Length: 292
Image 1 (cartoon, rainbow, N blue to C red):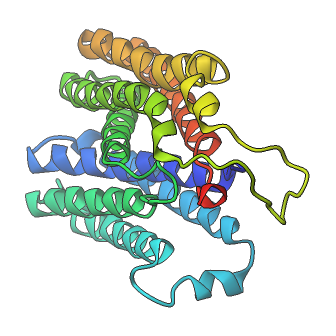
Image 2: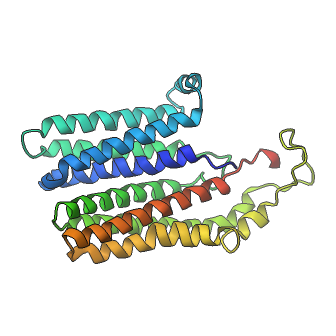
Image 3: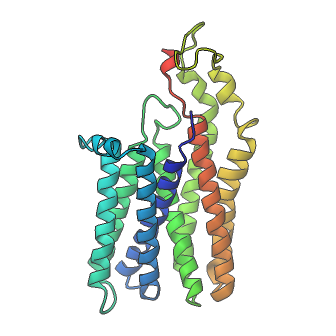
């Protein structure tokens, strides 16, 4: 399946933007986080807007965009509604906290709309025609990504302010641990996916008349030790989970410049690993139509 880079950027930035907003809201609900409120809202808003623009580039033409909004069950409709709710919630949060600390209800609102956005985004990729996508692990991965990205962004903002943030580090560790569970789940799932396909002797694809037949068993069974060795183990797992987890753990007692270094490297590593995982989804996410 062709890699959709616009959607990779979209899902990556939506996890970053909504995660940062949710962690900011969690801090507000606990009576914390006033020091990083404005930069956190800026990170959230910019990430959501750029992610939304990337998603619109995917449809390639404005008419397709409006055609996709024809019914509420459309994945792009649900994503746009979720994105709009988060942007409005960011504006409301900013307005109600201009003269002091954000009220606790605003923190709960931030967490609720951010979580709704991630669930809607993950749900739009649940497709029976793509076995790698059609499972609960996708929800787990995106939710973990959302928590870990948000935690790393907040840690970095605290470091820029010259302060420490052991609480944000703990939140990041929770997200990283959940993402590790999802990654291990995919490592178990991928080799078994060949059993989801029906093997046929001949078929003719009018779009690719000279293309050889795909062998699902060879593609899925050997992926993690062949083509996907570096992409999955080195990218999605090591860069995307293990390194950010270690750095978040070490950053719990750091502050200022040192904290910026730990959080910055962890954030970059997590983003690169997030891209690698999303590439795996597209590389192995081809349609079943030729097998039925």
